[in-house]
Image (cartoon, rainbow, N blue to C red; front, side, top):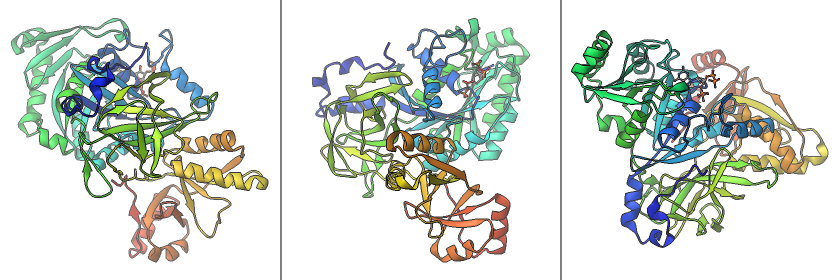
Length: 544
Ligand code: G4P
């Protein structure tokens, strides 16, 4: 069954011509596009499954995640991808909730953590930061959060696994406040300590939502709403504690404020158990009420494309080799403005060439559904889009070009060598292709020459993808040799020579022209910064 629904008023394409701005505005306002940022094991797959369950896409949880004894799933398709050494696809799940269309864009993020994980965040308007109640903030969550902060993406915080022993609520919120300077504002507070999750206090309404467990959390947990007196009578001290703790924070100024949330200064907090389906529809309610609808996107000319302007979209990920039988390439675009209608011929801004959109899909794991129409905020996969690369723009009618997606700070470095000198031409072509698609960052310097460029990646999986594609698409066997560097800093021509004379440092030029100094380790970096403070060594952020 299709995982994608089309609003019923779109069934006839005659009603969806761009000449219907009123309908367009309505469609934009009811859209929410978000991603879940988390560290592996925090429960992202379980939450995705639970969200889809709430949206009544899947009659019983388990259809996505795939556990022993549960239904066959999308994730075994992903296993297949992994077995072939090709990165897991970025997918988008679209569903209807409370008269809204929700787009959940998946952030690949386990062993396959890569530049794509960050790029996805250029396609969303909000993020749910999912935290394990026993572990608190973890490294991958922090990295992704920094990208959100940099791009001004508002964040809703979900403390997951409250059904299991963990830290106290105040400890968890303090950590968020102190470590990342984000002020948590309690929205749904747990009644019962971690491991004894009885329900949630709706902080604004002073209402109690009591949950009842269902078998294995496989169906939506029945909820019972009680007023404060009834809650106190039923839960006693647990209720009083929840009230006191949340009020303590609210009275000290930690209360929800729309402007502060949208500016990324505060984050509403919801306690939940994705596994038991507790607190899940509260997350959806928070997205619908607080997360912003799609808005205008700045263009390279210094203006902005408004959502009601003619169609435009930005490509945020390209997936090659998803289907070996067809050797297809899927480019995922996020619609920025106007109405997308399958079959329309648009312009590829980077080449000025026309691009036909006959094969437009939504992809969620194994599910591929043809898309007839899409609106700002929606994600559409385009088949065999060979010319498209992340950051590229497509538009109709009025020209627009969006700024490129920035390259993110790499942490893994390898020298790439062709196994056979005879295939050098194919090798170079393959390297250029990987570079232009943004599969990996390519670094060069005079010392090493062109025959063995250095690959720089955010996650090691990117190297595997390069090797697999070089072989399957270009017939080139290539070898990677890890380079002994672990971090990169932006530098300039004035500093390059002196840096190159230091031990444990080497300067390269990235294909976008940026000079990168690769450094062996953070102690080396600290030493150079202290001893040679006149040299330029700037941290590479996920520059906006
Ligand atoms: P991820 O995608 O973020 O990596 O996490 P995933 O959903 O796969 O969850 C990681 C583990 O945490 C899974 O257990 C999952 O069942 C468990 N989990 C997720 N949410 C909750 C929750 O709210 N409460 C509890 N108690 N556990 C939760 P696993 O044992 O690794 O796998 P499985 O055998 O259950 O699939």
